[in-house]
Image (cartoon, rainbow, N blue to C red; front, side, top):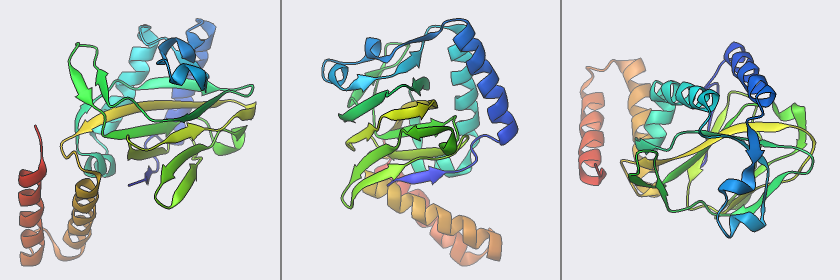
Length: 230
């Protein structure tokens, strides 16, 4: 399931985040993205990434995590169990990331591991600020191009082949991260998401005390009980 999540951050909040990114540039925190690439990604990756160990990067990362924890659409679609601390990248001057798939298992800062079920890109540059830089995600319907405005996010299955096309003008700045979901199967997550969205819509129209709303909610939680891994 490819799901755009609009307005994760407001325009005013994006201005504040961009000010912090300017400070990151002034502090020389952007590094060659190939330093964090595996042997295969090393051949196709050309971008910049913020130093993960910098205090400013941690501040930005914590800001994203706090916002996601209170975002109902994200929580409904992703059902997160573990979230890898968000990273930040910049594509410019032809920077790109060729076709690749994300690592299946990643090591968290506390040295525990997590399975990557869902990948996410939070755009921090508006689509008209740069040329190129589309996120192309392979699906059963073909490659789907994604280029959203600042503050918007796309989430998609981590087992998808994807790439970032060359940025030929301007800068494409984004945050990206992965999560392990309570529900491993993409198709099961999609069913739960559609059911939850229907419950929310019917609750607004009929009230949460409506008998059919309660019945659907009962089924939702029993499916979660059947499918969730903790």
